[in-house]
Length: 256
Image (cartoon, rainbow, N blue to C red; front, side):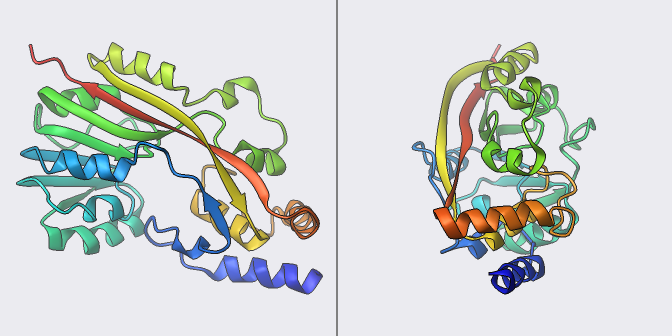
């Protein structure tokens, strides 16, 4: 078992991290998808506008899969490896990729009322005042956000019980209140909790290397004991089950 544990961890540590592609987990982890089908919704909306902005695009995978794109399509991304991956994927589709740290309190590098549609899939921190500023009157913000206590079964295995203020971070109603304060109107809000299964410890290592905010500063060396305990549990009890939280939010900038 010890050799098997070490091999799984070493394989995951050596695996590539570029882009926002989770295909490395195929056969090793599963996650239910939200019922609303965000990619389909995004693809439908970008086909019907003149100018669209995709915030925190990751490697650009979701936007690049759209059958049709608007005359003006722009994406932002802050992590340098993802900027390179998104540029390679989106430039051939005519999408301008702008390096910008959307998680920081810095203005978006675009003029007022520049876009009919602003989209995002799993933004870190929505900058509502900036979203409202760059939207045209009557424009729409459509996004899928990570909700509160998402995958916290895994987080708390490594970090222990989290305080209530941490568990309720990203609460949908709190985000909507902040968006309204920035001048946006709620059109739609839906939330779901979805089952995730991790089938081996390598999948956990790779996931935590990829989604770096789950266990800040995670390395397999720093959390060797917790990983070994989890490996033994997986070997004895089967898949480790956690639950992701997702919500769909659609907002509109008033036309007046």
